[in-house]
Image 1 (cartoon, rainbow, N blue to C red):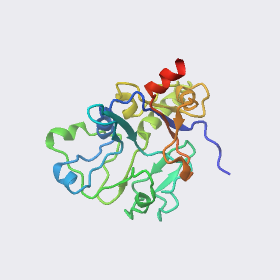
Image 2 (cartoon, rainbow, N blue to C red; image 1 turned 90 degrees about the vertical axis):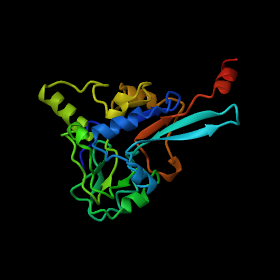
Image 3 (cartoon, one colour; image 1 turned 135 degrees about the vertical axis):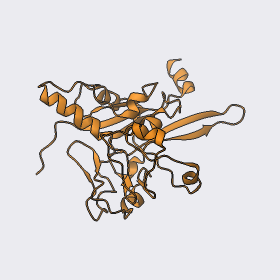
Image 4 (cartoon, helix red, strand yellow; image 1 turned 30 degrees about the vertical axis):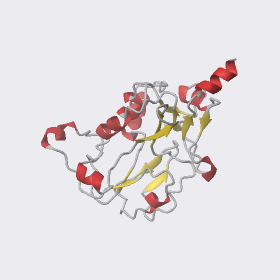
Length: 241
């Protein structure tokens, strides 16, 4: 029986704070060497975004309001993408992460077809960057070749580096010290990342909020990404009336 890990990484997304600025999308692209989405790629519907911000509209004109929903890999405890991979390129590790091993992937796209959240992307072309952008590539992250699957990893390179440094220095990993690029770039602190095994961590406290829910929870995938419902102003007024 596998030994239980000290950490279980998860994220809480407060929809009441999201303004749809997509800073998280750009930060993820820069941190993880996500291929550029050119006009040609968009026209062929082959765009790659490890995190996307879905936009919904509420109400009738002129009283229309935009609602935003950031969606990334849910790092499911019972991930439907994992059992269908014939080469074990995707698996769930002891720290709550749905790991993608790029060197194993042979591009069957079975995992993409089995993911109900549509957060896995197939790399149709060899990634290319203009000369002016090549120096901005992150040396800690591999540039994925053509023909494999890509997805969010909670910036695992940051997790590994930060935990190694803490272990080397003989100190406990402080809550909030470790953040993926999307959470670090968010101007409204919509995304909160941390250790769900730590009852005192901010992410654990937020996960217990009465507004919490999980995407497509009835499917039984048991995601490690928890959402907090947007506060309804009218309902709040009636509650405090």
